[in-house]
Amino acid sequence: MKLKRRNFFLEFIIGIIVVYVSVLILLFIFQRSLMYHPLENNYSGDKLEVEVEKVKIATSDNINLLGWLHKKDFKKFKTIVYFHGNAGTLENRIHKLNHFKDIDVNFLIIAWRGFNGNKGKPSEEGLYIDANSTILWLKELGLTEENIILYGESLGTGVAIEIAQSKDYAGLILETPFTSMVEAAKNFYPYIPVSFLLKDKYDNQNKIKNINIPVLIMHGEVDQIVPFWMGKKIYEIANQPKYSHFTKFDDHMMEYDENLLFALKSFIKSLN
Image (cartoon, rainbow, N blue to C red; front, side, top):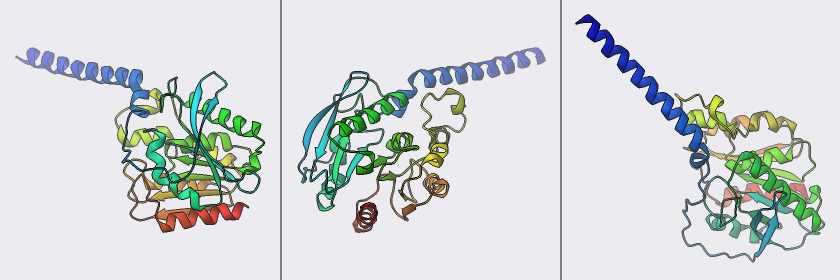
């Protein structure tokens, strides 16, 4: 009887190990499907109230990216380059972009590879290529780094921070930034060795130290996807000059209310 119990217990433990290892293998194989969601759509039918030109930007690895360009005056105003998050299309950001018509700024928003009908599959390395190719495209139009403000939203903060390192861009705006994708993943998968399994790590907390341009960090305290403490930590680590817009009631998708718009306008005005 004791031997049977021992065998049952041993089989039970082995079964748990097999299931756990199988889960790890599946997570490793399909992790990018869990991280990037190009087909997710919360677009509510907002209509563009700002004029945009649809452009195609060729990357260094021969992928054409869809972009929306709003040009007021390249010489007179700074140009925001908007890097969106891990889910949805450009249409999902219309409610934000519409507000830029009332701000003295040009903007270019691009869709990542694999998003908005673009070819390719998203990855950390791939998104860095997309971003750098976008900056090169703008430089070919005559813009310099001093004319450009980088804007990162959620996952896009990882891309904006990466390409802002040791550069002379006019400024950097980070909306709901995370410390690193490893720490963000641990928040959802506390029993998984994500630091070992994760391919795309977006190590913002170490890279932000290499940035010496003005930074605006925006985050809501009730963010249920990227914990507020991460945005606050990025702010604490960031070099001066730095500014913050922290709110008590915003979730992950921050509301573009009067207070946020005032923070944006004030920051952009300070760069001119």
